[in-house]
Amino acid sequence: MSVLADGAIVAGALLVFALLLAGPAWLVADVAGLAGLLVAFVLCVIPVAVSVIFRSFVLMSHATAYLASSGCRLFLVMGGVLLAKWKRPELGLSEFLVWIILLYLFALLVETLLTMKRMGQLNSLEFLLRRTPRGER
Image (cartoon, rainbow, N blue to C red; front, side):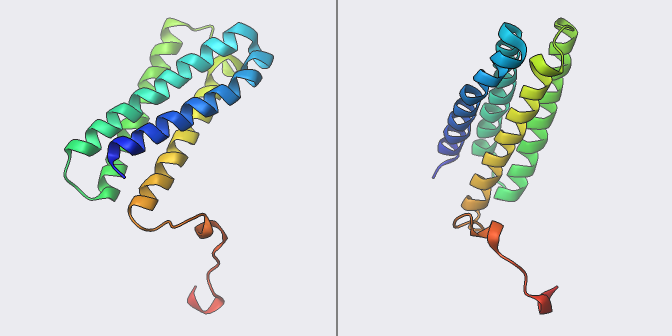
């Protein structure tokens, strides 16, 4: 699977997750919640694109590229949150911040699972169920 396919999977998963969050956003904060969710979605998708571009041009190990792209993602999202709060200070917890946190963590989870699979450390979700034998601690 290519880096571009990974980016498309993360972006698609983010879109589906954002659509699932649209109902709660509407219930919690009405139109402002949907607007905040849209801004949060855009702020989380842009770093995915930057991450895909970065990992496709840089020749380094998967782990190093993942770490660098995660740092890039963090700074882009943090900068976007600060910009959004500066331009629209009325966006509060229920209108924006909760959605950016949920989308950011979800994107990080999906990208981590894809990177682990690419590195061969993840065949399925069995790593969640695996236990360390008592003698090997």
